[in-house]
Image 1 (cartoon, rainbow, N blue to C red):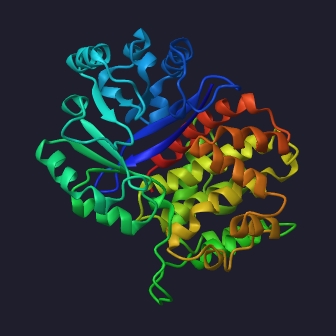
Image 2 (cartoon, helix red, strand yellow):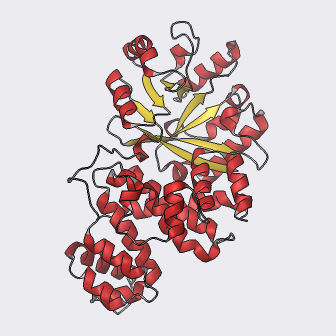
Image 3 (cartoon, rainbow, N blue to C red):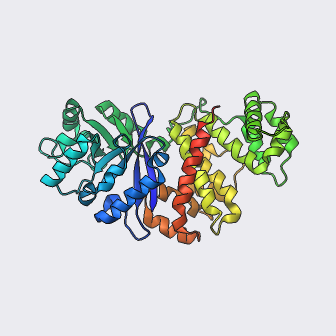
Amino acid sequence: MFIARQPIFDRNMRVYGYELLYRDSKDAKIFNKSQCPERATATVLGGLFELGINSISNNKVSFINFNYDFIFSDSVELIEPDNLIIEILENTYIDDNILDRLKELKDKGYKIALDDFIENYEDFPLVPLADIIKYDIISTPLDTIKSEVNRAITDRKILLAEKVETKKEYQMAKEMGFHLFQGYFFEKPIIIGKSNNKKSIKLSYIRIINELRKSEPSYDSLANIIKRDVNMSYRLLTLVNRKNSGKKDILYTIKDSLVYMGLKQIDRWINILMLQDLSTDKPIELTRRSIIRSEFGESIAKDSKLKSRDMEIYVMLLFSTLDAILDQSMEEALEGISVTEDMKKALLSGEGDLAPMLKLVYAYEKGEWDKVRLLSEEIKTNENQIIEKYLKSLKYSDNIISIKK
């Protein structure tokens, strides 16, 4: 089974829930674009139940696609109503049986969403049962649905704009009265020409990263940089002594703490610390996405032909949202940071030896399973092990995000 998730935001850019994209086997097609038989889809939902759907969706509601056959499966009720939004596909056949089934599920507390809604709002038989209506703003542009949006708001429907790709589209949908938003707009930088007020990476971070990129990094040099930053010093000592909890020796010095961590863990820690500091006015999901990508990509790389470059891949993917965090072009964002040419080529143009790994992670996030299969073959990794690595990266990101600054 293969699972990815896409965040759904509320009007305050907080995560409301996640849409789960999945397939049940290597040969199955993407569920939300196919007519899967009941047996296969019930297997998927049972698998989600066994994995623990809350761990996948970070204790937020899960939007799961249902077709005609799937909606009659008893497996639906494996997931509690508070954790599940039943999303009815746009090409689902409507008859009295499905209307009765949806009424039954609503009586049990489940919420119903209509996916890619293009029907006549007044006449479509599922509208009275729907709690959430999703509009694909590419298929149904915002300026063509103003009247039915107003009617839906009057009827107290929750409106979700999907495939929102820019901040401008997000703002327009928000002004129209949409409540929820899905798309990659939160990953796009807002670039308004040159400005002297742009966020910049603290010099201490750049110095540490550049020291770590040397062929023989110096613990003395690293300690001298960190001890000049009170917040960084405090967080380092707190982190290391927490890891060292239960042992007699308490590490009091910056250098001893760095030696205890080791260069690889210092590299990981300082890069995540930098992203957290830079992301204070950005959705937490942006930082979470960076951490998931980096952990996910590194773990895949270790079992691929790129295993000798796993740390490069980790840093490359961690920096994959740096342009959005800094509201700069990626080229500007990478200035001053010592990254390899292959990392830079992959991030700037999608080319070079590391680009297949970047593309694989992006394709997995979007549920583009055919691309995932082809790219997995290209880097010589076992596609069937990817889901386990993805779930571990979700758990890892939750642990990192939960650490207070």
